Length: 393
Length: 97
Image (tube, rainbow over all chains, first blue to last red):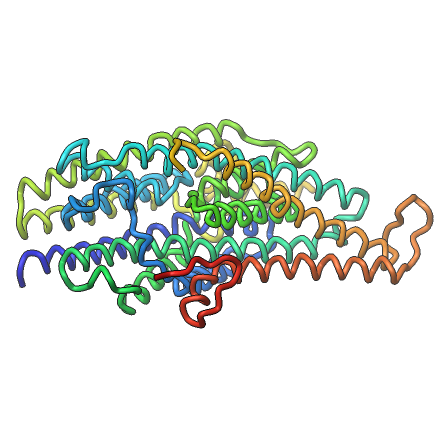
């Protein structure tokens, strides 16, 4: 096996791993509100979302949607850079998942690739203007626009059903919420699986196994990317779901419906106007808005602030990981370099997973009362506390 | 698209976002309310609630509008796929060379 083929295989495997983390990191964007409001059981919600991501991935057709197009000089991209960039994206996705912070998977990937590019060729390999105007500025605007729409939507919803008993409205709003959340899931599958397909396709072209004139990636690429994102979604990023569904705002069905409709509308409209916004930024803005728009609701701005801080450091942090990975693999070089890089990734992922087992969050405790932080109150003492409070009532 | 930011597109996204993203939930909630009044669960003006088939019918029209919007949303997501496989260019699907 020659070195390029070895690198290609490593890049494909790593890209699918990234796609998988993309799936479980972003389950919450579509489903956190339905899970928190009780419109769907946690397991049902992730199953629905995974199916829709799978279908959505098969709807992707655009090979032109190569990641980092217009952000880095495509002529300078090598398999080593793509690999290091993917590592940056995966590590940042896993770290933020551990902390339960919804951060943008696409930003993590872009950050990783930009970092690897800087390490490989320096500043001239990066198209800075593209980075600012198509990534940074939209990312800053998205949460505010989505938040505004969701605030007004939520306010109008509560206004319209004022005086109607909740028992009467609840069923309708649950349907509305499930429908709008499903749209978000479908759009997510189409947009995000396509990014990984683009990465693999780019790698195939640089290896010579695919031609630039091909209109579609090979079928196995579509199939494996669809399967990876769906499997990740099904696994469920419960830590992120908990922050989005319980940490920011206490969500009821009407708010969930308004938030998800706002997210779906903004995501679809912006893609119509040629912007690709981060689903995460839009969904988080919408959920905050649904808290602002509901009369008397409490919004935990501290949690939102920590989240915003994480968003600001996503690009540079993923870039540092990408650059370090590039240095390591490139300095060792050859088969050994790629193998060491890959094993380091496995080791870091394993360590983060072990850390997460210390205070696991899953489908059973995802909806426990928020007691100041992600994991506070979710250990064994919770059932006892709950039993006490119900017996007191 | 030469500048750092495209104010026209941002403005269009906000306006259309408000109409679709806030308007549809509002329409749906009005449907829920009219439905509750139509079947005689609550009344509009505090009088004793009565059945009103007319309001009931209007509520279902509103639900149908919202449902149609969801279908359009799905078609929008699938528009490239549909164009690629059937040659049918819906909802402004971009033509490929």
